[in-house]
Length: 341
Image (cartoon, rainbow, N blue to C red; front, side, top):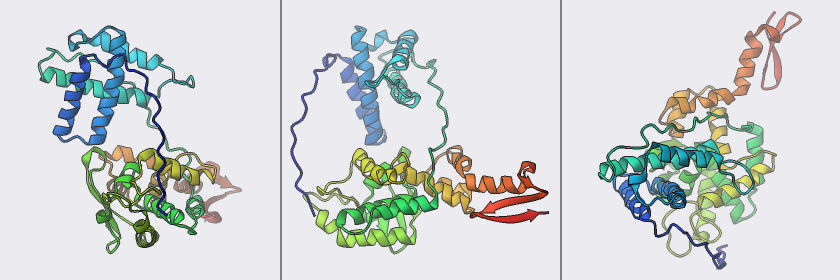
């Protein structure tokens, strides 16, 4: 089962004209400090990448020291992000713009802390307003079953993929949380998962359904021993090359199955489905909040907007326009039921 990984030559990287800019040294110190105060390596990586974009832009403006930073300069960079066009001609999403500006604000505060500048030039910077968008087309229970069954169970890769999707749907894990999940953190006896160092460094314990437990046990027994190669760091799910899944590879793998039912998206589709289907069946939203690892209940409340089946049921039972020839009809699981004469 374990495949030999092909070694492909790296593409030649274009030279970075800003590599000698002194701001890169300050960026590296700031990223190291971020890790030292307890931020995750993932968050530190986001900060490094975002500041790399900013410093390359600074280089085009002839800026090599933070003393040149002021509100007008930062707003000029913000305008540059808003006007930037990708290779396909599309602008940067507002979330992407915010992801590049938030680390810059943290960097400016750090510069003040280090006494490299007197005042924080980003304190009056207004970040792009982010729309709270509904998840795109949450699959029904039947569609989820179709997606899960698409993996089949005829070979090691199929068993692994089915186990991954069952885990995502049963627990509502994020893509990165699934990729990092360790064997030691899966307890099949209590049917639970210990999610360590989740978003914002929060730990939580989430339950697993019987189906997910059954597929995980089968994967651990029949497939994972054949995938172990080299140094085993303990991640549950391994690629055909015996390595932990990277986020993009994991997303690409799951996306293929979801596309078979004509839906967009990848791992997060199961997270949305998990929350929506539990709400449809009467789960309290605060339990959903704990299960998904949301710090703010308002983040979880978005799922109340996509729970359309329950909303349609209530609408049919209570709204005057739902009356048909003097009878109010609600559809529950596809069957009409007279609620009121």
